[in-house]
Image (cartoon, rainbow, N blue to C red):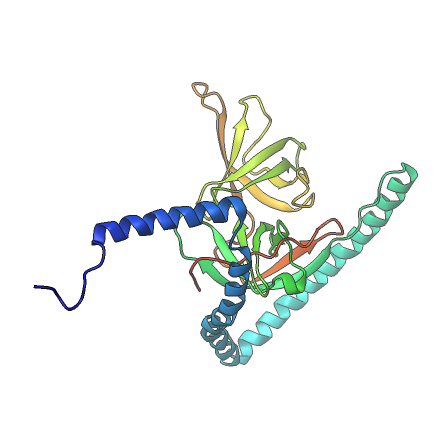
Length: 288
């Protein structure tokens, strides 16, 4: 007896076909970038949803600020006033030193460094994957954000832009396992490579010989090699040095200076050499 509704392929055949099509699409996208324009349009459509998802936290921040007591505001205002005075005094000394440095560079016919362009961004979301250290910020290609642009907070280097959308961007933190940054010791200018460990408060220095002069408490700053991060910005403090002669290299770890677990406002550093990168989508689900 014939059934009214004919049966299609079995579930196993459907699953195999879906897997084959998925692999083909992944290879086509990876090798030929076949879906780039589609991802850009989808990212532009999803941007309002990300801003809408971020709206409750914004409203909560505004409400908490309005409920702050007068005594707390007075105390915070006094603290910020003292901090501004200290920073102003330090800035005055730095301006004098910078002027002298520029004059010496001109005498030596060395190129004078131009000040970097700066832009303030705000944290929108944090990647919910336990195996990646990435965040989303509220600046994108419309504000001239570009790939590999340096991102800082008020303490030190946070990471670099890895994907640029029209109105937001994804930033990979320096502690991500896929990230590495060239650094040097502020005490003796020895250069190292600081790699992420996947832990929010730890970096590891790669291939450090036992004879290298490095100690706990040494400040590591960006070396400028690779032309990604500008030179001289704080990165981390060495907190452990283990020299085990049974191993080919010393085990050295450092603690990032940037407060990666409590980011709010970020600073994007630009340069005249920085080219606006190819507009890419900010993919993956995120949560605040």
